[in-house]
Image 1 (cartoon, rainbow, N blue to C red):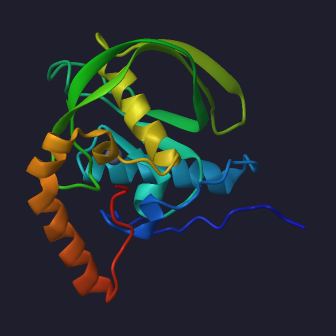
Image 2 (cartoon, rainbow, N blue to C red; image 1 turned 60 degrees about the vertical axis):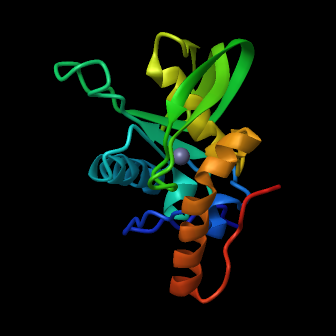
Image 3 (cartoon, helix red, strand yellow; image 1 turned 180 degrees about the vertical axis):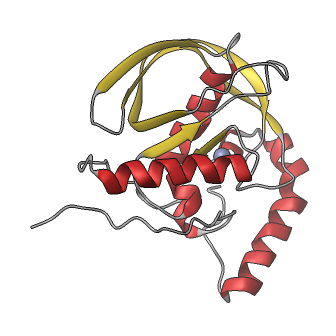
Length: 194
Ligand SMILES: [Zn+2]
């Protein structure tokens, strides 16, 4: 009996309301070469899409993995800090902070979202080794990226955090994305929880 996951070699970004964004994501149990190769491809894909974070369900892989690299947000000379986060979780969250977020799976929508300020990030690397790191979202964008991407692994999307008035502002664009999806796939996707 094998629990090995078959990772695709070509990664295609999926956008709202693709059902992969709402599907259940499985914990990674096999820390093999296929996992390491997929994680590198996910980093490459994130760079090609010009994102600062990308979660596996955004390429229709429903595994608990995301990548981040927040180069550029601290200035042109800031060093690249590519990170791979496997089976991530948050411990001891404290305080709150807000930041204007966007998402590669919601092109054209940006909104301020409330997040935890401080927390301990817990995750595994591609060899399965566990790591812990204190993050402070109000002075490190990585703290925002981590929470946004972790949400993806729970099937939660940043628009789920919007207030009714923010959602009203985004409504027209959401409808456009829903119509584009229906045209392409011939059926509606997984629309917002209401
Ligand atoms: Zn996102």
